Image 1 (cartoon, rainbow, N blue to C red):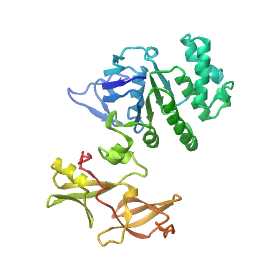
Image 2: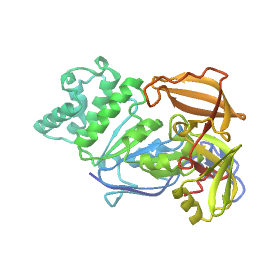
Image 3: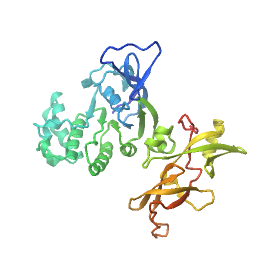
Image 4: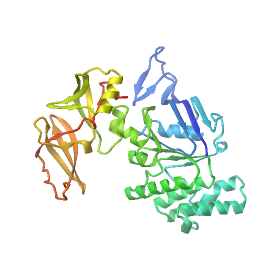
Length: 393
């Protein structure tokens, strides 16, 4: 059990070879990461406080700095700048073995010549833990993870999901203050990933440990995390509960990254009439909801060109005169729903339509080329300025 505090954490990878230094104050960009005369800046001014027993998920695309951040917490990467505290103690120069942290890797990292029992017992043997205590902890962890029947097997005789449970078991037998997990489910197929997500949620209820979890999969982030930290190009984009970042994305990157299918984006105008904010998309004019009115008014937001975001489930088919016209290009049957990919004045729009109406009758299917009209309410609109930031926040 432990609280963590990351203050202005920065990671710079020095240039591998000497190169001509840029002019003073000059910087260049390459592969979306900042490059200075010191080197490539992989993580920039990362600030995060993690409460005791909290489950924090770092999520973002490949190369955003999330695994590097995790490795700095573990002590596997040197911290270039900033301070890392665990339970109030500065940890920048503390050896990994002395941080009371356990880590689960993407590749399992099991010893092939050892049995499951020996793999799980190994870190305790290194600490010279008494044999009866080792036996108790290994069997207890095996029971929690439902791998008791595999204790005498070698890793090669296990499935991917079973190996990952062993890797997690080896970490939790140490009873660490902090459990770090670096994309532990990425090597599993979709069905196993779903099962293991559920196992991790159950595990979290049974052990008193602070979790820090890295993934590029937003479904894992949304289902596992108490809070999620969304990263891009080494910077934190937003920190919040899964519901907060879904309902109130801080910018266009977060809006596009969180949510499946991806949020629809429209070129629109924010207008104001008699102290009421409205959005205009083509022929459609929609008054924003009261909470959105108050948020924009509190910031005295001026009428302007905007990017309007609306999630696919929030768009509804309509026959109203001012509805937006579109042409169906792809129709995906998803069981209880149909995903319609439509073209609206050159913009791709995804609309989710239930296959049954409220009376339980099947709706008409929409073939390729079908003409439809749609609209949406002012309570589901997300208003972004041309700089990409949410104007309500």
